[in-house]
Each structure stands twice: as C-alpha cells, then as structure tokens.
Image (cartoon, rainbow, N blue to C red; front, side, top):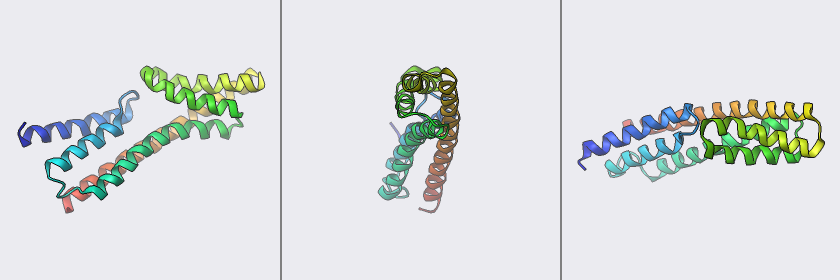
Length: 161
C-alpha cells in the first residue's frame, strides 16, 4: 500500500475510535491508539516516538479502568456490599460482549444480584444498581477526557515533533 493509503487507514481508525468513544460496543480508545501507532510508523517514528506512544498506550489502558472503576465507585458510594461490587465488576466485563445493551444493563444486573444475595432487600439492591449506573456515567466522562487527552498529545507531538 502506498503512504496515502496508510494515512487514510490511520485517520479512519482515529475517526472510528472517536465515534466508538461515544457509542458503547466499539473499542474507541483502542482504535484511536491503533491509528496513532500506524501514523507514527508511517512517519518512521520521527515525530511520534516510543515515549509518546507509551504515554498514549497508558492512557488507552486507563480508559478501560475508568469504565470498570466508575461503576464500582458508584455502587460503593451508595453503600453496596462486597457481593454487589463483585457483581458490578463482573457485569461490566461480561456486558462488553453483548454490545450496547450489555454495557448498559449488565453492570446494573450484576450489582442488583450481588446485593440481593448479600442483603436480600430489593429496595437496597435497586439503589445499588442505580448507583452503579451513575458511576458508569462518570466513568464514561473520564473515558472521553482521556481520549481527548490522547488526541491533544498526539496532535501536539506531531505538529512540534
């Protein structure tokens, strides 16, 4: 493939990743990182070096942490039991495999089931599930911030590198 084709692919990955950051089920940060890595390779790592790529890789990993930890912190904030926290974490991981609905519903279900096992009170379990959803929303906002930080670092390094 000629360099223009590679650049089109790199930009397409970054754009797909941007869309995926806002639409659950598409691994947005991973696609963005892939596009950035490809762009660095096309340029023989002259503008974007390994240090910058390492920072971008860490930020990419942190987007996954933000997703999972957000739900856990939301559940913990409303007094969730240990079982509910485990249920929310398992739900967050399992939900990824079921697309948009899975990402939205699975952590809630996991937290509610865990809380029902621990305390057997439906009202408390529902409150824990809601706290998990709120935490997931905060985690999603953190993920968006991390992705935009990745883009800012990449563009800055590319322009001044």
